[in-house]
Image (cartoon, rainbow, N blue to C red; front, top):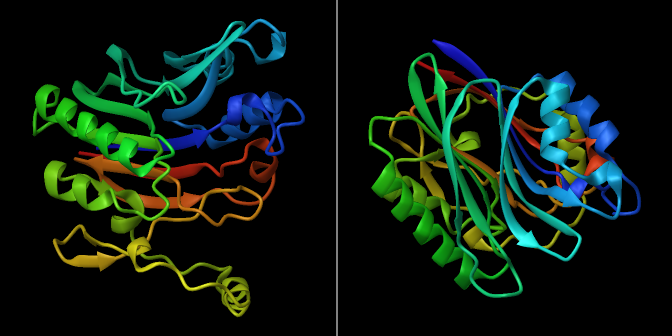
Length: 279
């Protein structure tokens, strides 16, 4: 059995939550302290010819963390580009970036890497889906088709990233078509020492949530569990449920959102952290 520390993070192109200042120094230190084994990153700048400190972000992070990095370039500008990246402590056997852009205004891709962990191929897909529901549906259809075509049913799968799926409409597709479960839907229920604070915060009047935000997902024992994914955006005052880690073939030991300092200043998203067991 191997225990993996998995992190998914939209790093906002290496800029702070407000976009005013560079945040890569704090990001490197924060990730170093997490000791991730697999790191799924979105909004990574592979090239920045204007600001040297922001150039080659996946490479600089990989050097600090002693990890192997692969990069999927999606959006190309005259002096910059950005996309998704996967960093791994394990050998990357192969990778491919599939263009799933739905229109000119949003360049999107699926970065699919196969990582070897104790002689087991693990399929890792980094995603950053579009802002519009129709485009997201088509991008998820491409993702489902790719997995059915290229991933054997008995091989483990991790899909993580910024799904922009604030109403959680996509989760049933992953459960029903691919047997993938969102980590918070199957993680053990642990008493949170900050429960009193959460209860206090819940007394603040809030608008009713749309019913679509709550969907039934199958739990680890096959029973339905009503578990909305966590809020991750904006990092300082999380309101929207944008980020996900889906898995197949793992046991989920632990899953949480990293709130508070320094995370609320590093990016406009909060990162997700999960401990997974690979048999």
